[in-house]
Amino acid sequence: MADTVKSGSAAVQNEEKPKRRRNVSQVRNPERTRAAILEAARREVALKGLAGARVDVVARRAGTNKRMIYHYFGDKDALYLAVLEDAYQHIRNAERRLDLARKPPEEGLRELALFTWHYFLDHPEFLSILATENLNQARYLRQSRTVAEMHSNFISELENVLQRGIAEGVFRSGLDPVDVYVTIASLGSFYLSNRYTLSTIFQRDLVAPAELERWGQHIVETVLATVRAVR
Image (cartoon, rainbow, N blue to C red; front, side):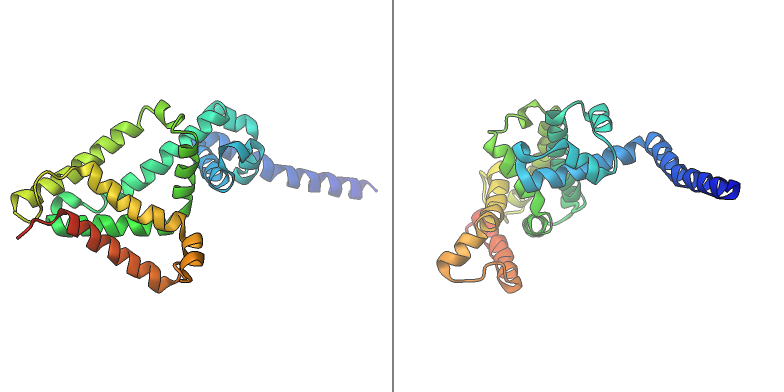
């Protein structure tokens, strides 16, 4: 009997030890815990929107508890704003790796157009999160202290590409970098946001790989046609 009790006690201790290690790990790795919460929140918001997203679901997916979420982010609204900022930061960081400043203007713009299209394809949650914030009329995004700055830097890089193209006689004068980017983003986001209804209306499978590839090339050709100098 004593051996049984001892064995049972050891088993309980063995079960408890990993839990203690996980808790210590969470305390010692705040960046990892915060990143896990942010990732879980991103998935929840993309799937259900702000109104439908639940903090307890985020906590469960992140392997933590609501207390830790409130500790790192404050409340649900602040967590949602962090998701928005992270979504924009991710795409802007990825764009910087294109190194547009070192590319010939037309090549740089071509790469940016294709990158944006493929980013939308590979990260459908990005467009879902943006759709949610547009339903909120950017009420939360206007509270951000970082989004405006990161986009100012991006537009400056794009303006540099356009100005170099103008100086070389490749692009026409008077180009607005915001207009150019909105054109690129619109051609991709409208297609994907409406792909199912458009496929049904026109009886064409717009999500077929060949159709997606063709549309990506169409985006490039359309954007370059709008900026090229008339010769």
